[in-house]
Amino acid sequence: MSKTNSKLTKQLTQVEFDRMFPNSEACQRYLLARRWPTGVSCPRCGNDKVYALKSRPFHWICKKHETVYRFSLTVGTIFENSNVPLLRWFKVLYLMLTSKKGVSALQIHRTMKANTPLMAGSYKTAWYICHRLRAGLADPEFTQLMGIVEIDETYIGGSETNKHIGKRRHAPGGLHKMTVIGAISRKGNVVCQLVERADTRTIDEFVRRVVDKRVDLVAHDDHGGYRKLHESGYTHGAVAHMRGEYVRGNLHTNSIEGFWSLLKRGVIGTYHNVSRKYLPLYLNEFVFRFNNRKNEDIFSAAIASY
Ligand SMILES: [Zn+2]
Image 1 (tube, rainbow, N blue to C red):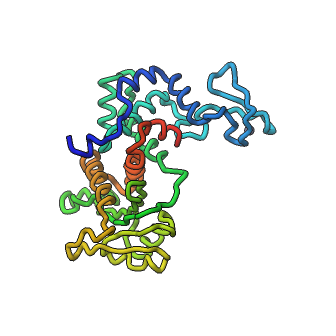
Image 2: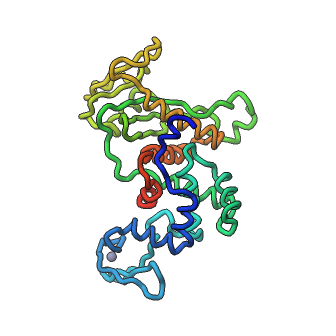
Image 3: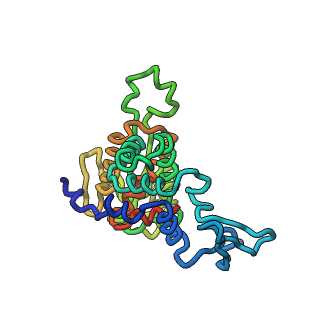
């Protein structure tokens, strides 16, 4: 086991998970407690004087509307309008979050077929659930990064552009290099975004969106796109990677590079090739897992965010 593995925060084990969630009703109670920790309120008007329907568990009515508004536990969440039992969603999410390098829908489907064949469903459903779960992991309460922040860009995919030339046309945007820019607060959170290209304007917009102006320092390499950051009011500095310089005082980009290698090992090792269309979903997944790396209850954090 590598050093980083041994420092991993302890997560729910499969046995603990199965004990906590023996059926979908247990999942419903769990979701209820995370969605409305202080009591159910109407998703439309916020009114907390709602009435539970005796005939249908986990359904309520709110009378503060012209016609009585009836709602369920899953309304407005990613689990809404789905025929998939909540227990299957939970199992897939559990497998996805507890795997450090990511896990493909195919692996998830196989694991579920081996462990709980009745809950496994089809591969197609597993694939669909995985993508919905990833899409839902976007952080709605995003706060700008503070402290010392590292910025960097990386390129993903495209390793097969020389092979399978005939195939390329059938994979629009699939096999070309994709540019991702990212920012990380040292010992804190990471943010990243798929972009067309890492030019000065794109980088500037990204930094202004994700990095607080009162940051101590923005560290980056000698990529030309960063040269105008001071005009946007940031204290920043570069290490001259092109000259073989990697650390100068506080200046280095080791943290963001650590995240890139985690991301690439995951994307390439687990998913082999990711298309431009789906890359943002994988970024969501890796960012969420990374930002919750010290959270002993990452599962609960994910459920609460849906
Ligand atoms: Zn209402």
